[in-house]
Image (cartoon, rainbow, N blue to C red; front, side):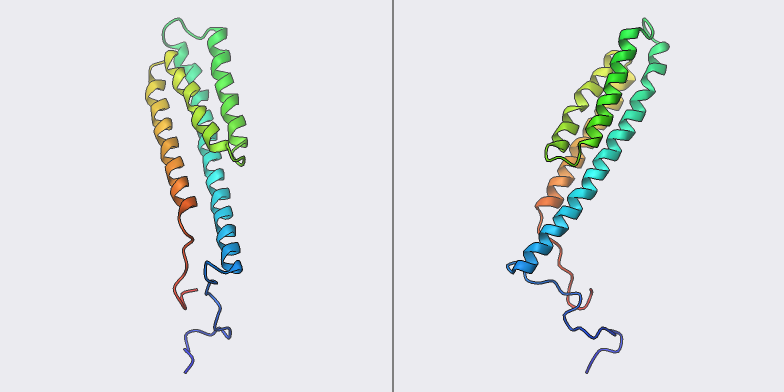
Length: 150
């Protein structure tokens, strides 16, 4: 007897093909591509947020040490531009590694003001966490819904 709660006329609706089939492999590839695209967008957003944080560094530099010299301002602005460029490159296969590499110049802004050692370290930890989550999500098998759960 048909389930009155399930009004679908197609008994195969909501079910995925077996992973070994061509359709199942195509679906798994499409799912991974969507997950990768979303992860790339999240990584780019973190880099843009990081660029905004680094833009506040000159305000802190003015109040400490020798102040804001033209060289220091140029270095900070170069880091901001680098972060924005790498954010735009996150869709490339090497984009996540570039995002991790760009954390070193951010950490180096700690030579200008001590608080950036702390903030830079937080962003490094965040970036390592993002790469770990990315690896787990992209290497795991696709989630298959249970029968009838659609």
